[in-house]
Image (cartoon, rainbow, N blue to C red; front, side, top):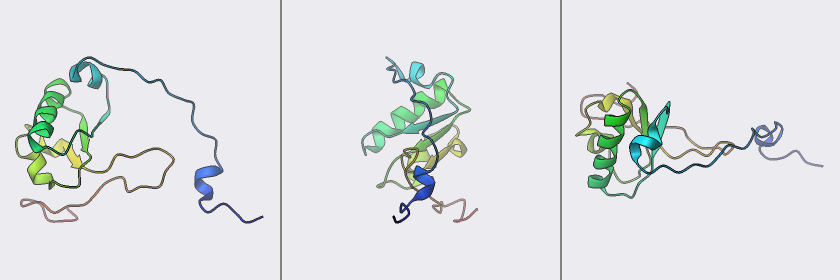
Length: 112
């Protein structure tokens, strides 16, 4: 019998199932978070509004943004803490995926 193509994904037990919860506001949703993954529609004005609400409620938390159409500098232009924002894909645990992207910005060359 051949080995599975991705043994690292199948030779360890899955973690315990989590709980799904709903929040009425962004403030409630981000309370106590260590990391926040933003995945709203590809509208820059909407992303800016969501980022502002997130950073007002959780100013010290790293925010990942799922986008393929905007540069990090576009996303970060109005953030009070742009250093706490990164552009990266949503990551589903257990599936192979790049956890982040290295993108050059006007004030920071790629790889820095």
